Structures are given as structure tokens and as C-alpha cells.
Amino acid sequence: MKKLILLFILLGIVSCKSTKQPTTTAVSENNFIVENLLQLNAEEIRQQYADAKIKEDVGMFDEGTEELYYTILYGGTPNEIQITWTDAGRTDINDIRFTTAGKWQSSTGIKIGTTYEELNALNEKPVSFYGFGWDYSGAVMWNDGKMEDSNLRVFLAPEQEPQPKYYGDHIIKATPKEIKNMNLKVQTIIYKA
Image (cartoon, rainbow, N blue to C red; front, side, top):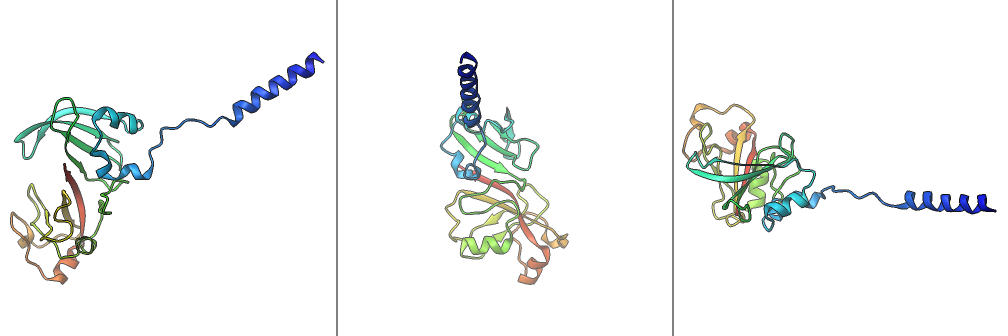
């Protein structure tokens, strides 16, 4: 009888252990919306993105004119994203930047690899952009379209080598065919808080 009771106790313990769900720190797809980071400080980001291989440091930004504290999430992976802060305590976000084609996107659906044509559709008005080969290479102008007040700064890059006239600090004047031949896609996104 004692052996039978012991057997039931052991079976009860094993069955309790097997029904217990493992705890995970997996991040949902919704957490890869850039704007969702805006209400978080560095400590909350560390908690919410526990799997993000976080790096923190201070560096020079905006053409080397401004020293800012920064945090990098998912460094060295397709989901790498950089957050700069307005303060040493990392409580107030200055901007959020990413350049790799991972899961991150804006709430409007703009992500790395979004095409020029898709930007025009999302903006509900044709965008214009600066020339290539300088600090603000391919910077998009929203031209008072739907995205004008979005706080998104988007930079295009050509997949095909552009002609020399498309390089430099000036708004590109090109025909639709010339633009199509460049096969422009979003290469960098900066969300300015």
C-alpha cells in the first residue's frame, strides 16, 4: 500500500512539472514598431527587450557636432537599432535609427527596403529626394504629403549605379523612367522624437 501511495505521489509531481508552461522573454512582432519605443526609458527597454544584446555608450552624432548617449539593441543582427538619448540617465529619447532589413518598421509600414513607389503611395503625394554620395545621401522630402508630420526621416539608395548628375547636395530632377531605372529603396530610417 505504501508503494502504491508513493507511486501516486511521484506521478502527481511528474504530471505537475510537465503541465507547467516555460517562461519566455520572446519579443512580439508588435514590439518591432519604432514608435512603441518612444514611451520607454533605457531600463524599461532592457526589461522589454531582454534578448536584445544591449550595448550602451556615448558618441558623436550629426556630422560630429553633438555628443549623445546611445543604446544599441540587437547589435550585429538584422534587427540592430540605435537609440540616442537627450540625457545621461537615458530617460528621454532623441532619435531612433536603423539601417538593416530586419523586423523594425514604422507604424505606417515603412521599413528598410520599402520602394520609392511605395513611399509615394504611403505619402499620398510624390516625394522628392537629395542626391547621393554625401552625409544626407538620398534624404527624402515629403512635400506636404501625408507623411510630412510623421517625424520620420527616410533615406533612399539606388540599387543600380546612378549617373554622376545624381550625386551631391541638391534635389534630384529626374524623369520617372530614370528614377525607375535606379530602383530606389529605403536604406536608412531615423525617427526624430
